[in-house]
Image (tube, rainbow, N blue to C red; front, top):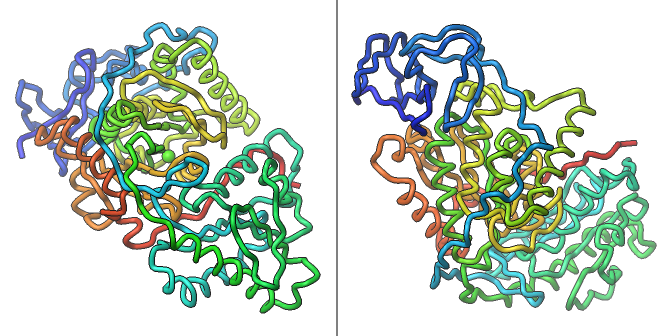
Length: 518
Ligand code: CA
């Protein structure tokens, strides 16, 4: 392979090495640049000499200032950039360049499960919600029995999932931060993939009482006998109920209502639904310097296709948006949406400050190995997932998104916390990675897109789609974007399976709890 770099923007004075084995000192690029030293793949090469204190530019944006003189062809290491200050939140342009609504994209459908409340599922799952960690091992025990004894009799049901978590008691339940995990878990309990009728297992004495988890629902108590008749939920079983004597009786009660619910779920059938019924959560994890060049722009192209088809597309991860917020507030549908976005950035700035941290806490060692020097470079690559359409709405942490089009749903950047929080609203998940992650979720399909072909080849049975050929010019962003769009419709229809679902790789739920623990 000829020495090759990719430059994203004409203003850029650095570029990314494409060759999987890097380049050696003296290697000559087409166009005349010579590598001054060995530079690994995905790391930055200086395109023209940069003096100390001058800006280092990638994506057409300043990612740092040079801490020393950098000569042409040199390797730009992490310590050669000084982190710029984040864009000031009170000086941002508000809805000054709102994109016009794109041309509608008609005729794309998937076969989903339509629920009575109008929501659409992409899987058919028996979900058993828990209010508190104390009951988690008991529900896990019951789920193991349900899977072996009951599930084989209900072939139309995909899975049985215990919605377990570390929240529910020993917390300041009235503190403002408590609203975040409670909202998240409440929406997950009503996930469209569960058919819309939650089953809740509660201990009885916990702070997160079922009525607090599902405040607007008329909860119905499940007794151990006779077997409950289920119609529209939600139903609640309390382990401290006087009628339940001994562990076996507790397990039998859970199995009893699971059986009734499985019989109902087994009657669900996939029907043709417009692509507008998709609600796709976008996330990146284990990103590298290619993420912003290959997989994230391809996902951004697919995001535009979804928006054109009338679907909801959520991007998240506040700390990976913060340094690119000046590129997003102009794109807001109106000034109020722009202010909502700023509100979420400010909330997180203050949250980090309370923890004596700042945005330099992101990126990770793996991100840096993959050539990402700092959070500014990471954020500029990350927001490419958001495509080019207008930002229609902003949802706060754990809030359910109902708006169609592009939405910012505030979450931490941590993969498993972001994914948990997006579950409040999504029926499809797209995850981009450069360093690689076997991440997956039980509740929704997780489509994994790699930034580099080397990763897709090494993890051929974990990565669903390879965006690497964009870096070498063998594929275009449009090609991979369309491929991803079609793959999502196939997965949402149950025609194709993600690798995470093939292996059953399902991460634990990790609701974000910014409130105090007692
Ligand atoms: Ca992430």
